[in-house]
Amino acid sequence: MHYTTKELSPETFPAFETLAIKQGGCWCMYYQRPGPIKYSSLEEWKRINRRDKVRLVEQNRSHAILVFDGGNPVGWCQYGTNDELPRIDAGRYYRKVSPPKETGRLWRITCFFVEKRSRRKGVAKFALRAAIESIRGQGGGIVEAYPVVSKKMAAVPEWLWFGTPNMFKREGFRVVAPLGSSRVLMRRRI
Image (cartoon, rainbow, N blue to C red; front, side, top):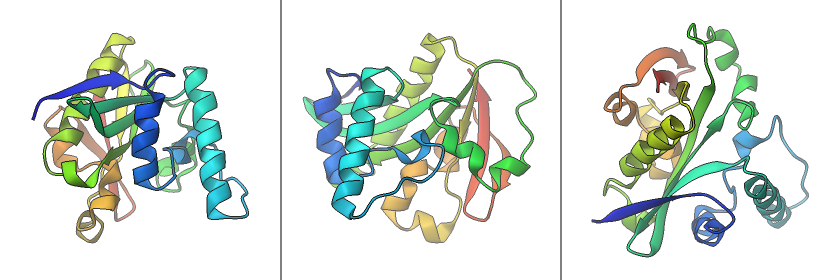
């Protein structure tokens, strides 16, 4: 496979949209909001998510690496600063963990999505490396990840949107603390 990457931007939004529709309508908005939103139907939820994602991309407040196989979008990795991804702070288990001892900007890697026919072909790993390089290019700092450790959850590909501990370990992340029984907090300085 010959993958390339591009940053999420107004110009690449149509590629992101292609994948978001396949993903089911979340649009990677869950962590970009401080709390839940109100909606009356699944279709309204999808419309609100799309509308809000468009607005954040236009404001340069939504970051992702898009992975392409040739000209076709096949996956993404969402990342951003703690201000851009505030919902993590509300997590019951996250609140129990000590903040990073190091100073500097705090980045978060929250979500991966790989379309079905491209899974298990290194797309997420490729996206993660590109996200790390993008963070480095923006001044770096402390980077957090929240991968899945539950074997039950890991058995379902859709639950792997947080990634796996091994993919982060290969990139120099260290386990900091458990986040309940299903995930762990990992950090690395970039």
